[in-house]
Image (cartoon, rainbow, N blue to C red; front, side):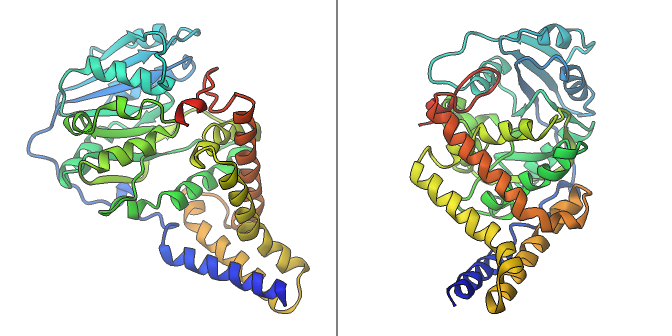
Length: 373
């Protein structure tokens, strides 16, 4: 009887989640009907880079190749690289590209935001700032699309969730779920409507410079570990924002194995819980209940518990289908979502464990989590 009640509650949770529509992939730049603005605004791209020599030529090269009709410059901030990142970037034959040597990390800042702050300070007074990561490559029309979306809705921020690298075995199993879980936390359609929900994807963000200044500048979020969504929330105080999927911006850094993906997730998972052990415990119990109990009931339960567990398992698998289709993965991966969720639960616990050992928020040799507390 108790098992049946629990299974019904879990099924109700999944039906409720389905009703929210978080799982849809309709917030997609390719689905927008866009008109070119009457006048193309000035844009400066700011790229923070630390030890990115293996990907920087392709990344900066894709920026230099933008077919943007307006004034456009690129500032790469070499954040104390030890692998010649700055030299590789300087070798790119483009008068659009300037390489800045970053200053020593200032107290109270995360490394990425400190590098961005230096690039923004050197950018002058463009209309927009394009903040993009050094391991993202962009199609030639990416900037035109970003600006067109921003101008069409008088938006303060436009962000593309870059298509993540998804060719290797571990990536095929785990990466679509990363974006799906991100959508669960920050439903794109809700982000794009008026209200308090805000978010952004840090690999590709276009922001109005004056709006950023009025909101307090990048220094207002200097210690944020989840800097993209914090920036999204900051900019939504100034006006509308937009976050969506794209094929135009793509991550070009592969994840070698599941361990590499685990490290990526663990870097900020505990920060998402505001470094609270109580929230951690609640999250792990909730994940076990919502994701793991349905297949357990479906396989080992009887009667009502078995049927409700099976129904919940099928609903969660169905909600995963649009993202699997976007990443061109087999629909059968939907049935593996409980196991994938278990992996992400482990990464969340790992994040908390690393934080307890003083190694939280590790990024390029820097433990940064304490800044966000």
